[in-house]
Image (cartoon, rainbow, N blue to C red; front, side, top):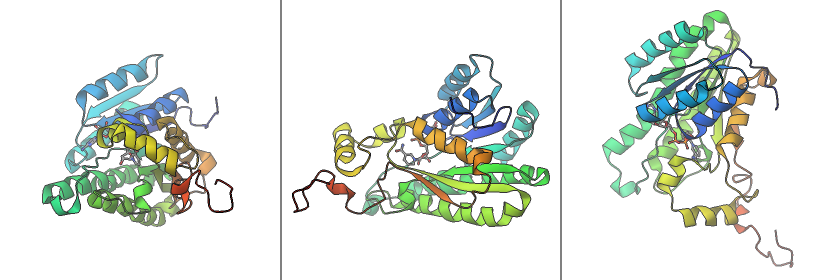
Length: 268
Ligand SMILES: NC(=O)c1ccc[n+]([C@@H]2O[C@H](COP(=O)([O-])OP(=O)(O)OC[C@H]3O[C@@H](n4cnc5c(N)ncnc54)[C@H](O)[C@@H]3O)[C@@H](O)[C@H]2O)c1
């Protein structure tokens, strides 16, 4: 197993009870990290903590809606008493609420922007306040390929994911001198409950075959490996950037013609 050099590091993961966040937590535990989870889903959180603790890992968790700014401050303070100084933070809490633009309500807009974007800031602010005096730390916010292009029925989601790219750039500029790195991880199409809940299985298969150069969906594990890289010293000079982990999906505008004949007889 690749050693990311993170043994003993305290890593907090918001949205850590499912999908990408859960995979990051699993890999972090395998690497010998102390892991703190935040999630709004109490049942999944309980299960994740029990699974992660098997084998004696140091884990802690708090059930919290990341839209609750005051609770964020309390919980981050609690994690420091439970796990010690925080070395890394990942925000993987996110919702999409797909809806055609003409039907999108103020509630849809506010929910998606508050969970995906505003909470990313308030969580980072609270973590940053604690990392700055210690002069080190790595923060990752999960954006998306939807931070790089439009997506029908996801106006609000796409706006929130573009917003995250601006948020990480500004924090990286402000906190770089304090030794704190802030980056966005931008997954492609990842096989998680969020994806399966929103898109029909046959459509997922078609997208995979037609559009993804690597001809497979991303696993949550693909994303976890990239997150651990960004958390580690191997990424010690990487800040303010957006790491696309999408199997080449956004690399070219003609990738939707995977396998098509372009007229010279050679399938591409
Ligand atoms: N799955 C994909 O294909 C994909 C692609 C690109 C980006 N992303 C992004 O990756 C992140 C993780 O997505 P996932 O696919 O792992 O989804 P998921 O639904 O499996 O996990 C998201 C977790 O966030 C938690 N959460 C949601 N709202 C919360 C709130 N208000 N407070 C606290 N926790 C909350 C959920 O309970 C869940 O455990 C999201 O930001 C998502 O937009 C996912």
